[in-house]
Length: 462
Image (cartoon, rainbow, N blue to C red; front, side, top):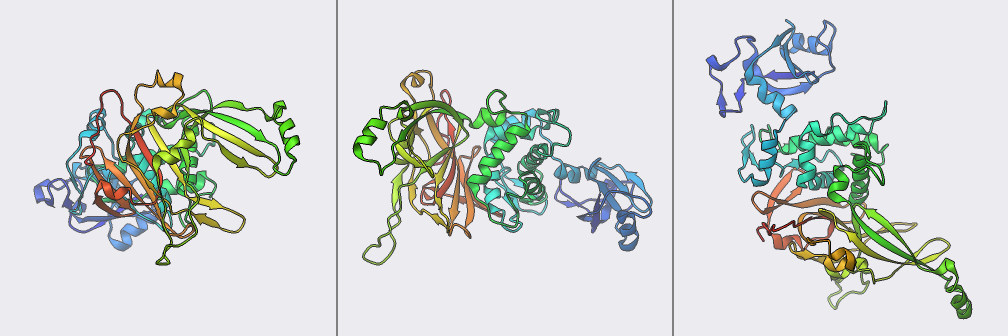
């Protein structure tokens, strides 16, 4: 139950105090509404809400499950159209036509507190140390097909889940957050992700916390897989909106290497054994991990550490089917090479900045030089696949940045607003516009790229 606390009633629709003839004739206390407080459910004589209404003369209460308003202690239902703004903020809904028009939306909305904002380009509260999750959630909320699916609750509300399954809570809360982020009638120009994050803590069994900094890539990987599973998806056969949007495929070639300490002759003999022949498996992926070259340890003549730079295409060479990389396990060494066989509509790059060893986590500060539009990945596909893949060009739509040290750094995100073609930087509650050329100067950690389809051209304000 929510207590709608006293003040004079402000009408969000016309931006002024309601006149007497516009007020409800059903409840004399409607012109006292100002703010909201929550209480345990119930309106009986011993309920928290009833006692609060008597002690503090707060009379208007809202049931969050039924979205019905009641006057206490008199205990009657209030029916008045002026209350619709409150219920809409708590539970926004979107028609198919409204969803279809989001990509063309260029108008700012005015929040009820007077601030203006672009729906979708909205700050999220950092409750304590959840900026890693905020950045990922904001990135995903700006992927149009994923956003559109979750804006319409009918798409997923009838999915059957086993009794007692808690994972579907993740789906429900993510849908609610999407609708609040894209709500053109918000009270404020920011949104609290509290319910969403509570579901994350519960469903991840406290792997991801609100009070402790987490890793953005680890969270993204877990969240996408958990969403896919909660929507009824499986590893191989059953697809969901998550796999439709992000899943690609590749071939992984693996060759076992003889132990480096063995004599040369013995190594030569072993290479003829079946165990040391190259094998190939087909595998799917939700994101591609791009490895950075080792950062140099030397300083320049001014005793400043040099921050190295590397072109995006250099680190993408890992997936050209030719480049080999050595992987070491406790007992064995392998050479692997990768070749892409299917490019998804939205491609996620995770740039591997952190290296963990037994003692600490080290961060690689290398700057990746990338264009924000027109990245063609055709050369990373096998020849037979190139013939059937007509569209292989991608444009950047989201760029998550990690600033500072590995354990105590912070996250921010750059997102493209599709309607205006402008870029914005979001860091918790702060939202500022940013020039596209400034995006490439940051320590990019996670990127989302959109594939151009058919005759689509670049709409970005670069």
